[in-house]
Length: 212
Image (cartoon, rainbow, N blue to C red):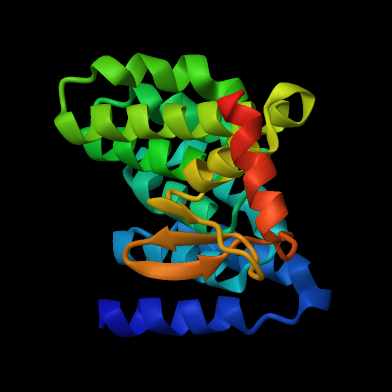
C-alpha cells in the first residue's frame, strides 16, 4: 500500500501543469507532512525528474527541515544542476554521515565552483578514504579549470591544448597534419572542440615553441 501511495503521489507531482505551480507547492507540502518516509522521498524524486528550476526552493527548504531526507535532496539538487543551492549543499561537507559528505562533494562537482575550495579542502583529511579521494579529485579539477582560464594570458598554444586534455580527463593528445587535434580517453578517440585543421607547419610551430 505504501508503494502504491508513493507512486500515485509521484505521478501527480510530475503531471501538474507548469501554469499551476501553486498547486504543485500544495502537493509538495502535503507530501512532506506524510508520516511515510517513502512518500516524502518519492516527492523529492519527482521534483528531480521534472528538471524545473522552480523546484529548487522547495528542495532547499526540505534540506533544512527534514534531516532524514538530506541524501535524497542533495542527489536531486545535483540532478537539477542547482547552482543556486551550492551554498546549502556545502554545509553538509561536515555531516556526521560519510555518505552525506561524499554526496555533497559529488554534488558540488556539478553545481559548485572553486569558491568552495576551502570548504572542500577540509575533507582532504577525512577519516573515510572515499571522501578524501573525492575531495582531492574535485580540488584538482577546479585547479585545472583555473589554470585553463589563465592559459590565454601566458601559456603557449601547446600548453593550452594539454590543459584542455587534462580538464577533459583524457589520456593523450594526438596531432597529425591535415587533421584536427583529437583526444584519447579510455581507449577511444574524440575530437577536440573548436580546433582547426592542422598543417605540418602548425605542428612544428607548436613543438618548437616549447623546445626553444
